[in-house]
Amino acid sequence: MTAARAGAKSRRPEAGVWPFVRGSTRVVGIIGDPVEHSLSPLMHNAAFAALGLDWVYVPFPVRAGALPAAVRGLAALGVVGANVTVPHKEAVGRYVDELSPLAKRVGAVNTIVCRSGRLYGDNTDVYGVRQALRRVKLRGATAVVVGAGGAARAVLVALEALGVRRVLLVNRTLERARVLRRKFSSGGFHVEVRDFSALVEARYLKEVRLVVNTTSLGLHGEPFPAVAFELTPRECVAFDLIYGRWTDFLRRARAADRKTIDGSEMLLHQGAEAFRLWTGRRAPLEVMRSALAGVETAR
Ligand code: NAP
Image 1 (cartoon, rainbow, N blue to C red):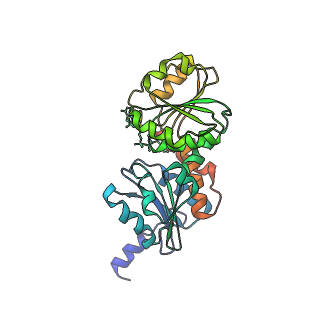
Image 2: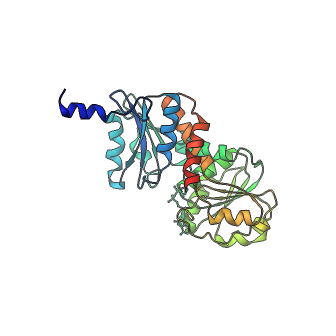
Image 3: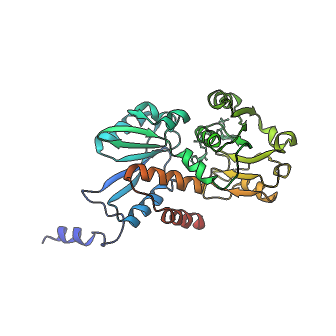
């Protein structure tokens, strides 16, 4: 045996060490810009290891101009599927072969499945939101949604499915919120556009059962505008889509003694549903939850 071959052998990963990438390994990943901060590789690779699946989940940093080539490249490379994150969720639908009814309804794709060279765009964020809010009684309720980006779209579709009757949609850019009002308001689901001042007015807050932050405010520790949680009913819940950190938005809710939910349950469940779409297997939820909790505790 040559020295080079002996060296190569000694660098081989130990049996049982994951991921063990070899010729047969199936690949999934995440397309976004940036993707360095994503916890999805950790969560999915922990799930593959727990089920002994010969799969690996990798990050794909993709600039906007490279999106069409990157998406078509998934099929060419035999990649089984991908998650899609900021800033591509709304644009990526143009480059897949088919959209699920839910992805069409939301107007955003966060999961691509490649089957026989064809690309299917789906949305599992709606499922993630529904699961995160599964213990909150929302039938007939009024909710406040702050933000009008891609994540707000998934939240609005989920809230309608959960039986919310009225949403006060608050956004810095009002025209962006008006686009969502036109798209999502329907017979029994009223979306009304308001500016940030509504977050401190009793006439709006006194009947609110849920306040959701779908903006990126707080992602880097920024302060959140004033929200008078003390004017909401005692059972009002604050839900922040940001995960892995204690945001100013949640801090304000906690100070008023309101229940809080952070974005990690949504992240977990949207990931579990994507896992099921790719592998056909039920995701090992507790393994994935522990993988996320390990990072969050370490932050
Ligand atoms: P996006 O499409 O870029 O929308 C960003 C939103 O934040 C817009 O409403 C924007 O308002 C608002 N915003 C940004 N900076 C602001 C500022 N300085 N002041 C006031 N408003 C500001 O992003 P997205 O895809 O909706 O994602 C939003 C957040 O949700 C991100 O933090 C993301 O990490 C999180 N998220 C979490 C999960 C999960 O699984 N937990 C899933 C999806 C997204 P304008 O319209 O005025 O610009």
